[in-house]
Image (cartoon, rainbow, N blue to C red):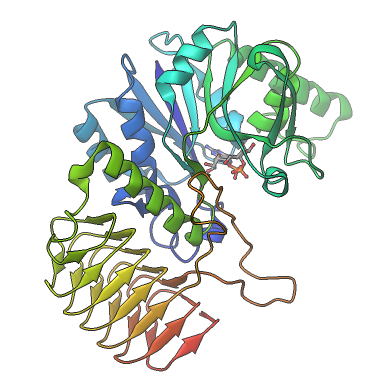
Length: 418
Ligand code: GDD
């Protein structure tokens, strides 16, 4: 077995700004681990999985240290393969097909780097093996309204996919594609058919590169749509927690759910409640190098990064505090992300708006609202302090997004501070 993680490139992930300005979005820490480390960790638990290939168009330098750390941590072969131009969700795999097929794996997983889940990988192997499938899709139920933002599946008998429609303009089905797949290497033949058809079309029409670039292949529109109804495409509907991370607000949601998975499966990663290094409520992850004042109150659903400093009487709730951030005494941080090296003075208040429509429903999908509404106003959002932002003592920052390196000395509400 092998796994491919698709991470896109620097031109994608724009809704994740400013958090993706100085670190690639796939490396943004959720529940204390870079987002795609959760994928790698899930892969490392699958017996006989020999290699993880990360495919994207970020510069190899951006990923080098991460890949080294992951190789050492999990003892797996982990490599980054760089597309020099974005080739689409299947184009990169087709381009690097020889690397994926090397060692003759029987199957390989394909995982979108921007999803978070309790990945049911072993279950997918068993299901896929039991069918004569080219590809099996992990699927989950969404509401009618949410479904049109995803790939929608209509099932036939025994889990066969009868129809596949990517982001339909009207409701087709509430069963959606989770962006996690297991494929048999024969899938490369279907990709080759798509590639040669596009190339012939280009030659026949004499488009001279003005048509579709044959090397750009979309797994969803070019492959899944074509395979639906052939009896070779299957879906495994699951109820495991799953969500997409497109906006910073959805990172808070993913943080909460990865923390609750730690509670179930790896409780040593959580600070002991209620008497950890300070008063702890619910699920809280604290990096061992962080300094926490014993009178601070943290939780629920908080992650504190390396070398962060949390002062006396500080209250933090539903938030992510990144490495080296300093939060001084008696400050409140709610529904917010504090960027690396950010600094908040004493008695300040940093507060966002919860973007989760239904916090009590454990499997509710996270909404990823656009940054602006149709009147050009900032949609309710969590508050984000970019890298190295400082907020003066006693100031209030509500529902705002602050770009890196700003020094704020007054109150702000509902603003993007450029
Ligand atoms: N290597 C590479 N090259 N990766 C890419 C490229 C590319 O050219 N384009 C996108 N990706 C990666 C993204 O970084 C992301 O992790 C994943 O592929 C999906 O990317 P999107 O193109 O943004 O699709 P989406 O997230 O809107 O929808 C996809 O995921 C949904 C589940 O989260 C589709 O697969 C939907 O059907 C699905 O429901």
